[in-house]
View 1: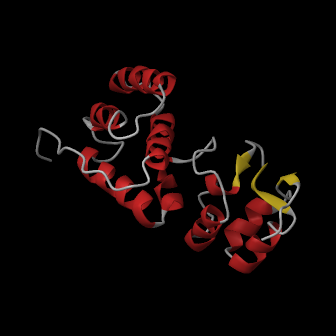
View 2 (view 1 turned 90 degrees about the horizontal axis):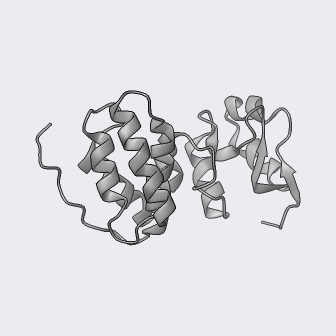
Length: 166
């Protein structure tokens, strides 16, 4: 794939993504960087919920930044290759889903395992956990931090099981 210079996605990229034509979507990146942004929120292609999974995997294989912001919590699909997926699945199995009441605390405990997030990100996660417990935190951002942790830990890591049963 040639090095593309454009840093902005075409204006019709949302519609193109919704149509689901993988070939047409990939063709956009012949002239755009895989981390190009677009739309009202200036998101990367990986941030679009409608993006087909095979295109998301292709973007990651071609250098798309899975830690780029904003990224939806379902971004685990973007880390769909090999051990990154294993780490995400191990973390998800251990901590549950963002709707679970225990999820924030267990998510925070795993972000310090293996190659931990940088100290400022860990502090942000701790603050977010407190806010989520009070029902006013940003679970999306907490998910973004979890995705960053997965990206930092490319080898499988055995995560401790939670001290409760679901």
